[in-house]
Image (cartoon, rainbow, N blue to C red):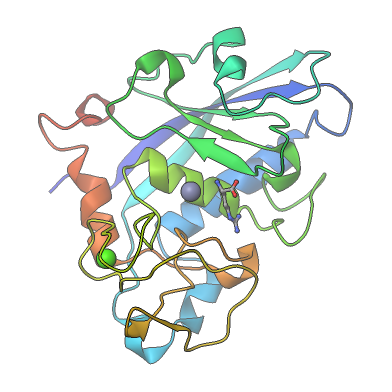
Length: 237
Ligand code: ARG
Ligand code: ZN
Ligand code: CA
């Protein structure tokens, strides 16, 4: 048992206008959301329906801001091909979560790399207006949950529907099978694949206000990457 795992975070703010040069307050508000969501101290966790309430997990992972790097650049959208990462390389990605905050474009809120990939592109990318809970924000993605979702991927979680039909797994046994993402703020129950979808899971695609839990199964999948021999074992001790 590794106990509480703290992940130090470097934030790279890459901006083409003053709105995108988000404030330190906005950055800190995102670190706060990560700490709440990954420790299940978020106030909305209590909304979980009875069926899922016992699965709400404190992942025992915390985040601390280790540094902020600001870069002005005339490029107005960065896409999902990791150009922002080659332009502003990650700093010690073996031991630090690197987050690039820049406009991705194409309606993309954020994207992430799974553990075990190249260190040069390790980390997550999030649009400035989807980052944190105060400042330059776009509803309904203004509660910092895009970063929670992307850090979930960075810690090895798949989408809740397994990115396929009912039989396609997310490799987590306590998340019900589904056949596609949910959007907006679904009413409970939403039934797919003969079970109620866990639409309120951070790894679905619903609005920020309607996602509020990881499960115990997701917790063990995340924590296993820190174990000896695991792809993020260098981050602990
Ligand atoms: N990668 C997903 C996208 O860009 C992130 C979805 C995050 N969802 C959310 N409610 N914040 O579409
Ligand atoms: Zn995703
Ligand atoms: Ca599952």
